[in-house]
Amino acid sequence: MVRVKVFLRKDTAESLREVIHAGLLAGSEKTRMDPFDADEEDVFCSIAMMELRIRIVVWVLEDPLPYVDSPYPAFRRSAAAAGDALPRTAIARLFEDPDSEVRKTMAAAVSVLDPDTAERLERAHEENRKWPGSPADNAVFPPETMRRFATDPDPRMRALALRDPELPAEFVERLARDDEARVRREAAAHPNLPAPSLLLLLGDTDLRTARAAAGSPQLPHEAMEAILAVAEL
Image (cartoon, rainbow, N blue to C red):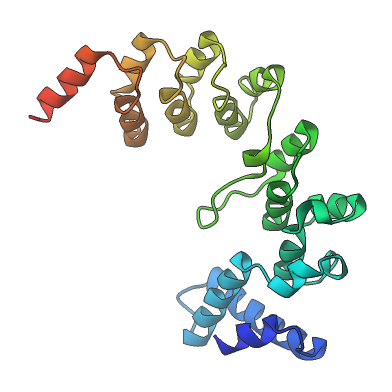
């Protein structure tokens, strides 16, 4: 991808970098809006933009401050990867970046992510299957916060509550009956889920939840033997 390599060169003129980025972005947007109308060049642009979303530019990382406000997310993300080497004001700006991947990178790069900031970033985070992970991955929430998450209207926050291995059984049991499969799936793997609720999840309509229940170390031996018998193992 010659254009991507030229775009990422430190010695590329800013005027040329701008032209390259605009062209790649236009083709990528066309592919996203109407993939059936996109030609080979547009698809190439889409692939190039995906590469830029995951690339950390070494020369930006080595001197990040000038690129905190770059018009290009790839450069801001690379600056964010510098973490604690950045001034607090720069870190604060990158936590407010319009690009969710920049915010996530900043959250992962700092040595200490305070719970309030982590919660705010998590609620604003735009999930993407191509780039898993979230700002909360680098956060440690106090027990009272995790219990509050357990009753949150947002299923993503309820699922997050189940990362607390000390979450009381009554919360876990309630979440095992959640309307959202992603929440039930997390509950199925929790060590504090009572056995009767775990057994019920073996028959969950969501296959991944049922598999999570079957793989739980808390599953009673009798249930394990029954599963193996059905599978004729």
